[in-house]
Length: 142
Image 1 (tube, helix red, strand yellow):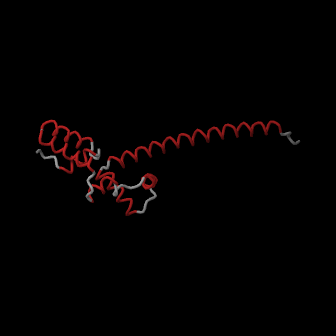
Image 2: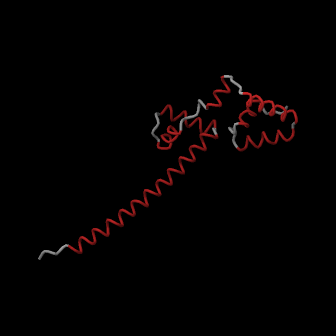
């Protein structure tokens, strides 16, 4: 087998590798029948339902922050120690699921900001018309 480990194959199956690592594993799979057999065996184990602590840990993503915690991370509202952990999880580990979740939250945040701006402009425009109309209707004192 090539230099691809069993753990890397498991991460490959769960789409937990970076794009570069995924490309390396796929290249190795193209070149090695032994590695393809190992991958098929691993897929069969997953289908049978491996119940080791490590498998449950990965399957349930016990080390991943929740979506709410990722939102707090975006807002900078996490405790310093947990902020360091989430930063490590995203930037060093590069968890694909959490990075995708974070990107989704960022897009929702930018959409929300655009909607808030649009709503404020609508309120301002309607209020400006009311103030102008009220001024025009009010008789002037002499």
